[in-house]
Amino acid sequence: MSFKSLGLRTELLRAVSEQGYSKPTPIQSKGIPPVLEGRDIMGGAQTGTGKTAGFTLPLLQRLMESGQATKGKRPLRALVLTPTRELAAQVEDSIDTYGKYLPLKSMVIFGGVSIRPQIDKLRNGVDILVATPGRLLDHAGQKTIDLSNIEILVLDEADRMLDMGFIRDIRKVLALLPKQKQTLLFSATFSKEIRVLAHELLEKPALVEVARHNTAAERVTQVVHPVDKGRKRELLSWLIGSNNWKQVLVFTRTKHGANRLAKQLEGDGITSAAIHGNKSQGARTKALAGFKAGDVRVLVATDIAARGLDIDQLPHVVNFELPNVPEDYVHRIGRTGRAGNEGEAISLVCVDELKLLRDIERLLKREIPKVVMDGYEPDPSIKPEPINKGRGGQQRSSRGRSGDGNPAGKRNSGNSNNRNSGNRQSKGRSGNRRNA
Ligand code: AMP
Image (cartoon, rainbow, N blue to C red):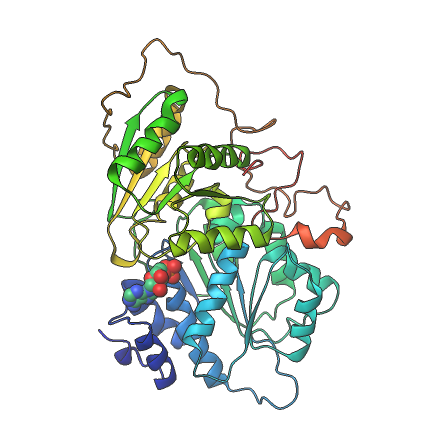
């Protein structure tokens, strides 16, 4: 199977070959034909499978075929919704890359940055918009965007959007779109909520699945190192140093924990940066760029901040702390072993986290091998303590809560710059991701 045999136009083939892709990945070869036919899609694919190109390439082709006149202001015809700023930016990059030989314009909008330049750019007219739901609604509220000509809607990482409490925002956006449109829904996991949404949204969708439900990326080698909580940092530094790891993504449960760990690793002589929702967009972009360029050896991230990071060939992911929600483990380890590369996911697990580990293994339907490291044997006299999930945090996820975390009617539109995006964790809200 080649990209050409999928029936893609030459401009797209040229852009793809410039990327050095020799053949389509499974999600691409299965997903591109039905999208080109105009069908709705229910795509089961983890990150790293090539799903972005899988929907972007046929989306670009469809827009070219539907060929709206470009005289005057071009109507907005395709909308891609993503859970986080980082993912939104990356998707737009991909659209830019694959569409470089086509006369289509795209742009990205998300919160955490000034809304004015976005308004100006929208006013000039774009064909494709990638957006996080909150900022999109800000624009809709200010009537700086017209969604009435949308032909194609993509919901990327829909499971994560629901996890992050975007369902109400998503429904508000849907209400602004034409009824007649093509909808592509992608999700790594298929919870009941996702199936409900799919049922409401999609018409006779083609089911395109490349990974079994809720299974971790198969190329990723997984291991658990049992270790006492107080010795995790030491073990991590030792693992990085003794194995001479050059690029490691480390997950913590809280923003505070991410900051502290990054500082401690720096103290150990390992260049590190933290990335989480309390960091400004500039700081996050800088940290990511430093990490990608190899200047920063360790990127310490919370779940939400890490969502959507596309870092090629990331060899090592370390769970410094296990996530509260087992599905997050799958998302985390999906950061490694991307698009055909080998990867290793290491979890440092203390006695407090054994229940979380069992929940993860239940989800994966297999045990993760445990390897006790010499010199880091857990002290059997240490008793488990409750896990600190952040101030007032509670056990179960935030599903179904309001889209912006604010009580109805308490939205502060003046604060819209900060309200949106994947890291919109408002203070004082309970829920396990509150502190992410
Ligand atoms: P995604 O799952 O969309 O985040 O893509 C994961 C990575 O795979 C990205 O770095 C893409 O550039 C890369 N990729 C996408 N399609 C292909 C392909 N056909 N061959 C090789 N790499 C690809």
